[in-house]
Length: 362
Image 1 (tube, rainbow, N blue to C red):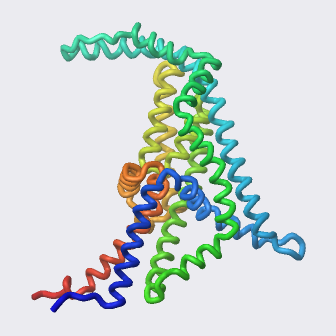
Image 2 (cartoon, helix red, strand yellow):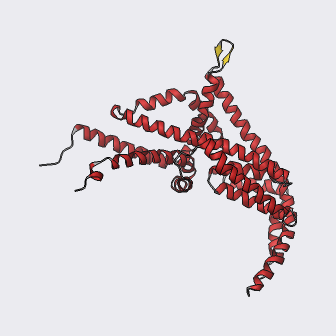
Image 3 (cartoon, helix red, strand yellow):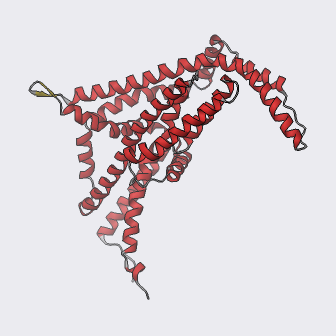
């Protein structure tokens, strides 16, 4: 008897094929989707703030959602500009200090490393003169020369530069429309779900929303608190680059262990370059030790929650895997995609454990 498909199976196959083609098209359009994906993630995180403002009253009237959206976007832009204006000037100021300290640091390093290696029969001496010459040439560049290099690079990679500039302009624009029409947009998406799957998909969507809400909003608070703590603590300890190192350590803490490790390395380098003796190293050890305890045992359990279900290794793997597959867009969607996958896997596991295939003993 020849194999034939029912009308329902044909429709299912058609929509599955169209879905796969759509996924393939999105992968091909990955670079173009960067501002849209970025704006969608920002809209998801900022929509509660817009809703809160839209419920405020100005006299007898509610604040229009349009005004609420503009206020939130303005605050976001101001926060980004403030971060740039704080970090960049401090780093520019510290480059000459770094250039002055490197030769002394290399001399001390050679004086300590060479005798230690000779004790084990390894007679090696660093080419301090050559290293000094290379590093000082790289760091002694004047401001005019730096801008000349930047402009030359811009000419070489003009297309990439224009792409990034366009993305920076498009993101606020797309973000505005998404925040303005967020609830009608979500309603339309729910209306496209097949009716027999509405209940199940709505329940899974609520799980994903709860998961991401706890992680993203809680992690944002953790980042802000830790950035403030590290900046203030390093400044009290006398570090000249306390602000940029503290801010970077706090903002990168969303990548488990990687942000902390990078901040620790930068602080240790600053300690070696700026201070003589062990004071700087001891200060870094105390500050980052307290910061790690604060993050692991107080902030993360209280603000992020223990029931998120995203293991740190899973977050790191998702960032690397999605970044490798889809580039920068992959990094943007790694966390939402991994959250969705964790919910789907959890439901599949429950279905598997309750199936006759699993429970049958014959």
